[in-house]
Image 1 (cartoon, rainbow, N blue to C red):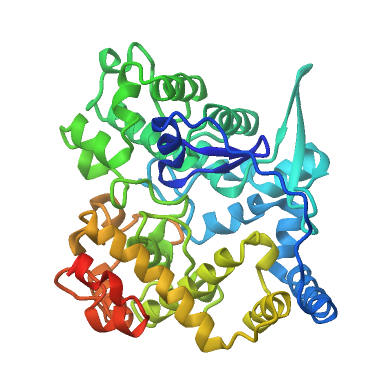
Image 2: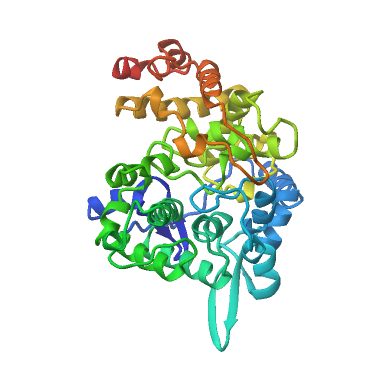
Length: 434
C-alpha cells in the first residue's frame, strides 16, 4: 500500500508502486526538459484546445469540483447508499454532513489551490481554528474523507483532515490504509482482536487517536501493524477467527471508497479491473442519472467495457483526468491528430486502447490471475439493511461472464482468446499465455 508522492501532496496510491520503488532502493525520479513540444498543426490544435476547455469547464460535474473539490459529492453518495461506513457494515452515517466538501469549504476555506498550469483548480487550502489551535491543510479528496471519516466511524472534520494528512505523509494508500484500520476496528469490537493484539490501543470505531497510532504501526511494521501492512485481504486471512467474512476486498486490495452495492456497474468495473480495484473507467454516471438501472445487471458489461476504453484513452494521452471530464471523444481525438499530424480514426483509437487493456490482462494471467479472482469478498455481497442501497444484493457472476464474452476472453481461464489477441495485432504474446 506504499505510494509514490509527486509535487509534495499528489499521490499515486493504488497497487503499492511505492513499495516497488523501495524494494529497488529507488528514492525518487526527477525529470527536466529543455525543449517545448512540437505541434504539427498549431492553429488546429488551438481550436481543439478551446473546445476542450469549454466542454470541460461547463460540465456540471466539473463545476461542482471547482467549487467544492471531489469532496462535494460526499453528501449525495451518502443518500444513494454509496458511502462506505464502518468497514462497509452500515448504510447510514449520522454526522456525515460535517465531512462534506460543502461544510468544509463553506466554513474553513482559506484559499484555492491549483496544480501548475491547471484551469480547473479543484484543490483548496483549509484553515480550521480549534480554540486557538489552527490546522492548515489541503481539502482532502472525496475518497480521503470517506476513508478517514465514515469508513472508520469518524465525523470530526479536523480529525479526519489530520488523518488524511498523516496517511499522505507516511506514504500510505488512503484506501488500503483505511480499510485495514476499519477491519481491525470491527475485529476489535467483535472480540476477534483484543487489547493484547493491539498493544493496548482501544481500537474502536470513531477513535481518531487509535487510528493514528495504528497507521504509524503499519508504516513501520510494528506489532499489529506488521499484519495490517499486508493489506485487507491477506491481513484478514492472517488474523483468522472470522475476519475474512467481514473483510471488504477485491483481489486482496481495498475497494475504492464507494459501496458497490449502490451501483452494480461500479461493482463490475472494479471486479474485473486487472490490477485490482483501480480507477479504470465505468458507468457510475449512467447509473446515477438513471440511464441504467442501479440494482440490475442490465447493460452493465457493455457500459464497463466502453468506460474502460475511454479512460484508457485519456490515460494514454497523458492528461489529467479532471481536465478531460465532459470532453467529447471527438475533441480528444482531434487534438491528438492535430498535435501529431496524423488523422486518427475512432476505430484506430479503439483498437489501440483495447490492445492496452488486453496486454494488462495477459500480463496478469501470466502471473497467476484466475477467473475466480474476478469476484467480490463476502462482505460486499451482503445486502445492506439500511440506507439508499437497502436490500441490494449484487449478482456479480452473470455480469462478469457477459463482460468476458464482450472482451473476447475465455470463460474457463480468463485469458484473452487467441483470436482476440490476433485481431488486435498481439500475435507475439499468444504463446506466452497459451
